[in-house]
Structures are given as C-alpha cells and as structure tokens.
Image (cartoon, rainbow, N blue to C red):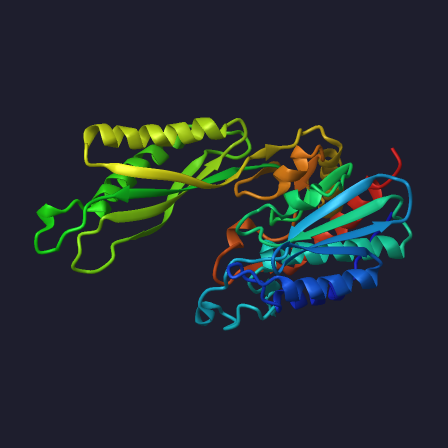
Length: 386
C-alpha cells in the first residue's frame, strides 16, 4: 500500500509546536497542551486530560475504528530551557524557522517533530480508512525533570500490544536505553574567619577530594561495556557551597548523575559510590558527608525478536531504502514504564540526540517527513488482527 503524508502540513504543525515555549524548568506545558488537544480533536481523537502535577497536564488521545491490536505513541511536551537567544542563529529559540532544510528551535528534535509526525501519521491512515484497531497517544509533562508522566498514565489502566517512544534517534530503531540515578552529595566542615583558616575545616576542600576520587572512579566505568549502549557513566554536574567571601565554608553540595546500562542494579551502583566515599573517610578523619538519592529511573530493553522491533525494521527498510540499524538510546527516557507494564517498545523518531539540549537545536526536514511515513505504515501493520 502506498502512503503519502502531507509534507507541508507536517512541517506547519512542527513549526507551530516549536513556537509555543514549554521550557522545564519552570514547567509551562499548558499552552502547548491546549494546542495539541485542539489539533487531536480535529483528527478525531477522544481526549482525556488531567494534571499530572499541579498545572502540569498529561494528554491521552484515543482513536479506535476496529477490534484489531492497539499501539501507543508516547511523547513529552516539555523541553529544556532555551538558553541565551543571542547565541541562536535565528535569534529566536522558538522561531520554528526552516533554513537550508533544517527546522530550528528548542524542542524541534527533542521531541516536538516526532509528536507532529505521530499525529500526521494517524490522520493519513484515517484518510485511507486503514486503521483496523486502536491508537493511543500519550503526551506527558515534566519528562525533562521527573520522567514519570508515562508511568502515571499507565497506572490508570491503559494497555497496548506495542509502543513507540518518539525520542530523537535519527530514524534508527532503538530497543534499549540507559537508566539514571541522581544523588546530592554534601560535605561538612567547620566555619571560621578567613583570616584564620586553620581554625576551621573547609567543606569545599573536602568536596574537592570527593570530586577527584569520583572522577577517577568514572574513568574506571569505561572498562564496562554493553553491546547496545556502551559504557555506564557518572558525572558531577552542579556544585554550591559557602556563605560569604570571608567565611571558611562549613557546607558544600554537588549533584551526581550516574547512567546505568541494562543488568546494573540500583543497590550495587549505590554501594559502589558509598565505597568510594568511605575510602576517603578512612584516609581523612575530618571527611564527613551525606548522600541523598533523589531520582531513579531504571534502564530497559526490548527483545530483538519482539513484533514491534521486527515491524519497525521491515518498515524502515521499505521507506528509507536501507537496512535499519538496531541500537540503543544512550540517554534516559520513559520507555521503561511501558516495558515494565508488559508493552514491548522501541524508541524511534526524527532528529538526533546530539542536537537535544543544545543551542541551535534543529531537525532535518526530510527526517520529519520520513518519520511520519514510517509511523503511518507502522499503524496500518500494527493494528491489524493477529
């Protein structure tokens, strides 16, 4: 069956989504949710909407025309902050402007272009009366912070035979992703006047020791390898400490980000970190610390022989004309909640992860169109009776 999506309509929709800021923080998905709800109703979706957190909407679109199988398309409406507008070549992070075949703007790759492709694909299939089952579209808030919106929707009883998470994969079929655990590490000292530093204990110096040890430990992680995702990683990404420029600091805090590959367990990962810190404590009796975990999302993996994986490979081969690469998504995403609910899932979308969270984020126009075509073929095949 030949499927041809409306190219101009997809690009208009993508551009319109990018033009609506939904930065997180602060977390302002409401306007983009209003727009998407309106567009989905035009297509024919029945919409359920509720606040996942105060003022943070989740949207569930449901469209059923037969008693065939059900497929979920999952995406997030929030983006990271845009940064300094003067550094963008468009001088507007929310321009949605197309320049030399690239559509620019915060969220263009991560992941508003895939949301536009989801919806365009459904509309295309409906126009051809080829939908034999049900399509569910989950559009969530706060993915860039909590990453728990999809889990919250699934807790309400939704289920499906397969799913796609539209993170940017450059049209590669990805069947695994890294997990993440984050801690706040605090070191403690004793304040004193900076004219007599020997009378105090400098918490920043204590943290410096920890940072150097943790860097050495992170380098050792590179010796571990996962066939789809490479090495687990660890990084220190924020630091704060001290109260005044003439006071020896008695407190310092950093955030630690640890990415897990399938097979790694939270308790083992945390134990390794504590062992490093306890090693410092044995060598320095004045080293006092506290470790507080504040986020954990496990890694996940879909079996390569799952129906959704084989369908995606076949369809990408047909639409793109090349043998699709099956790989892993090196960041963290909400696929894990679907997999843990028994829904075999792939990650697939337009744009590249390397563009996400960067100044001058963009997505190739041709990738958006191809993604919509692939999604449309997938809907036709995925919703057929078994």
